[in-house]
Structures are given as C-alpha cells and as structure tokens.
Length: 123
Image (cartoon, rainbow, N blue to C red):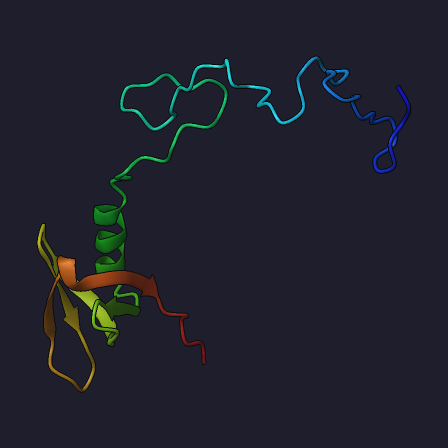
C-alpha cells in the first residue's frame, strides 16, 4: 500500500480492502464493545478520583469561630443583596447578623448564597 497524503505513516485502504488496523473504512472500530454508563448508582469506578462529599460539616465550626471572634463577614443573599456585619448567633435554620448603625437581621440559611470573611481593617 502506498502512503496517502496527510499524516505521516497513515495508509489508505484500497477499494474494498481493510486498513492496517483491520477495520473496514467507515465502520466503527468499537462497535462490538459493550456500553457501561459511568453514572449509574452503585457502579464501581475504576481509576478516577472519588467525588467530593456532599457535606463537609465545617459550617458549624466556621459560624462558631466567626461569632466568638466577632469577625466581620459579608453575606450574599439569593436576591443579590450583600449584608455586612458579624454573626452573633446561628442555629439549624437561620443566622443572626449584628450590624453597626443598622438593625440586626435574622437571615434564613436557605436565602444565603455564601458567607465570606471581610478583610480585617488595620490602622
């Protein structure tokens, strides 16, 4: 067989012939391989990394430390509003934010997109 123009080392089959790999032109090389979807529940994963856990249980530690040290935080709400203050109290469903010069707020956790520590103001 003669080398065809294109990639070096590739050859083109002659009419009705087979490629060097043994497949016919236009055929799917892996047609006989069974399909095993990776996303089925309980399927065994070979190799790859395990997915991260759904819950890390670090929320309570972060909220407790923020409240004890009165760290300033910014809280982004689901409607896009950002509230700044420090976390005074929290429970399973809500967070109480104490703000300077403004009313304190009780915010339901399901309305919170994220809580981030504000950079400390050094004088």
